[in-house]
Length: 130
Image (cartoon, rainbow, N blue to C red; front, side, top):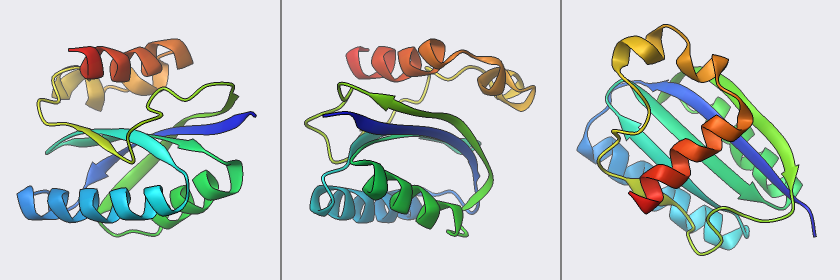
């Protein structure tokens, strides 16, 4: 069955360990309840998140994120149907190292917006297999 995949980047507002912990707890709970899986790569200057699962569920979660004041400057990078999930066992995997995105300057200069869908997906796969 085809799955919806959304990947977006945003700038954190008020990023700290407590905010991140809250996001992960909420995401894991809601995602598990809604058959959504994914991954979050983050650091103080960027959230890069992949969501995958049933189309309406993924879209609903993404729309909630777009209304969440912990995210600024949200950029949709990928919205695609996919046959297989990249993170089928993870309600929300998290990369605590966040070294796979690129430098702060690269991100600020639009590195992610210029990347292909394959290159963006590979960021997650490199981090996961790291």
